[in-house]
Length: 421
Ligand code: IMO
Ligand code: MG
Image (cartoon, rainbow, N blue to C red):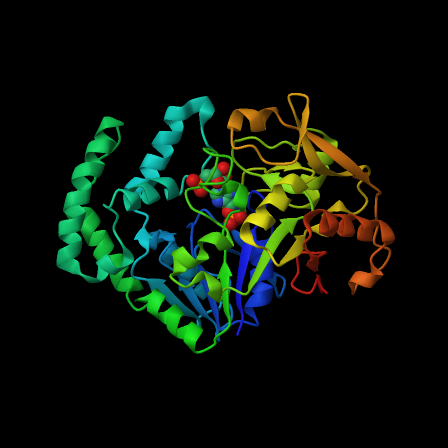
């Protein structure tokens, strides 16, 4: 039995979709355990590119059960669009299970996400405006609507009535349109009818699957620098994307996990605002952005680009108990002069080797780099051994510095361009 977690070790967009798709083929079950449709997981095969948002990455394989677990926030309307989208591209035979405990992103959450951002003006977080934060707020405030509520029509109406009392007050105070109970209720009943065949108790399903020794893959969205507790708060998302949260978000015991694959881009990117010590504002950054197609899957925003920051990665690997690294988009660095890796920061004249909790301190951190030689791939590379010596040096340094082995190396966007050690 293998219970594997895939987690992003930077600021998201590390290439998690590709590795999840790759490891999914060896799994019986693929599970999303946090976040929502702020995620954009790109999967390429048969020359086609699919962007998944809420659907787990095992959805293209009809033998895999895909679970949207308790800790996720789910927009039922956008999920329907996503399901219809994959159906229209010929994928009709899939297994999906939605936790009856997961919280629903409601239309007013999207309105509030936008309004709060506008209020912050130049201090805005740069959210995906998918209503993620406001939905988690209502979950914690105990007035959220859950997927299971869609199946209890009378209860849903009562609950929605109570929730709307508060939400409409909030919307009104922000000068936004209020929601009509009957109207929203009818929309929820309609979407509930569409989704009801997928809604179930995923926690029991997963516990039983563990007892039956099934292979389960937990697919993290976002990255650990966006973690609500340990990221660059407040420039973070509203959930915890690491292995640390799998147990809570899916309802399984922590000791069930036996493999944690940290996904790490060979350089660094970030979308949205917030400190980013190794950010490049020069032609090398532009080159990496173009070569790596570094534009948001969800929002199409150009991503901020920088050198690999191992202070960040090492902290996150240690925190989450990573057992191996999947190093992604390595081919993007081919033929780039003066490659650098950040190994420490300088903070007010002192050398430090950690990520400070204070946003002000982190904003003052300057990267200290080690430089690496340019590498080029002469022919098609089929194994680690065929890599040029300069490329091997870059990879070995990551391993030595973090104490974690690079077991998977991606050298192209297609499924086949993946080297495994
Ligand atoms: P994947 O799974 C990169 C960022 C947003 C913003 C902050 C808060 O594709 O790696 P939110 O909408 O979550 O409240 O926005 O988090 N963010 C991501 N950045 N990849 C993601 O997901 C992200 N999901 C959220 O840009 O800075
Ligand atoms: Mg993304």
